[in-house]
Image (cartoon, rainbow, N blue to C red; front, side, top):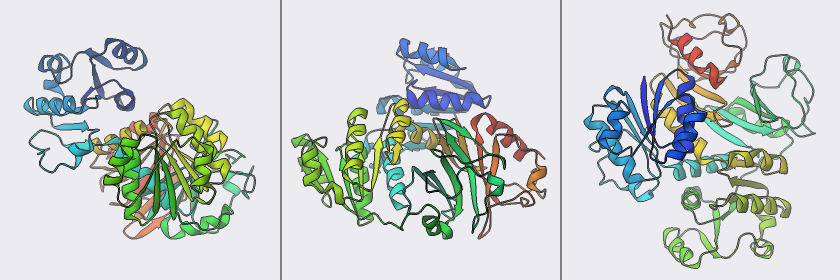
Length: 446
């Protein structure tokens, strides 16, 4: 498959990196020559200098042979025009990132006529991710759902009261089906085998049936907890979308914004949210707004350092859960080590959503872990696949991969080596990104 990507920013480079690692033919268009050169040096892809909405630039990139165009520049208009041009060239699939919320919700814009097959808004996608964290009864660093919500993925931090520290996974006996599918240790993803141990400071990714979710509170020594009130720092688009989603859930929300004129606009857009004009980094303001009694704080300003500072202040003052939006991925390990409960990164979220769409069909869902180092994919087992009707221990999956769950009709199976996959089963697989292509080939192979 040949893919043309317009925009060599963080999202464009992440998608290019993932697709090229799967031996897809990728061409990256970027008008800023310095940015283009940096991408050329760091990625194994062909780069083209120019405006991605320009017909001549597209022709230079080989648009006539392309199967897909992904437009993720900083300009919504450029992305729309690029998709329209790609439609004229007969490109089968066109994806556009649009930052303007009005474009996304404007039903008058005929996306199909403009040639756009999929629209992704990073702010909406990130807000949904934040709210998903708050829906968990546990304090988690990440939460995802698979198989229409029947299988839950949670990223949990291992603290000193966890009962299985320094025990080999093969010796751990849970009271109900749980699979430890991956371990984040010192910023490295491990797909564990039975000999691996859990150590203090690890983050573990577990898969569990939705019906057993509340039973995890006992294992991690937490009381079941429901978020009832939230403070949001920053009247950004992410802050606005998060407020709207929380209002739909009946969660009381305050939003702190330093710009007075912006506060007036927010008051009109968010009638269910209490808008506070002030500096969210001010300790006295946080105390006066009852931060010590707040269930959760979300820091989503446009400044990473400000989000980091307020998240740490809120945690110190007693906020039960703290989430920070961070654009610079090198800050994320620092935040996690300092005690911030969860970090959201719009780039990773956007790239995951786009990859999920472009792989749709056999792949139902896709989530990137740690800047794309590993992936979780949900797919349907085809009747002609080579993996059907064989014990899992005989499948010879790539070493850095594991089948985390099998969903058969209404039954969720957290599998063992003797379990097998049946036609039309939904299977959830954890793997390092370098192994994904091998897994897809195994599943497709007859």
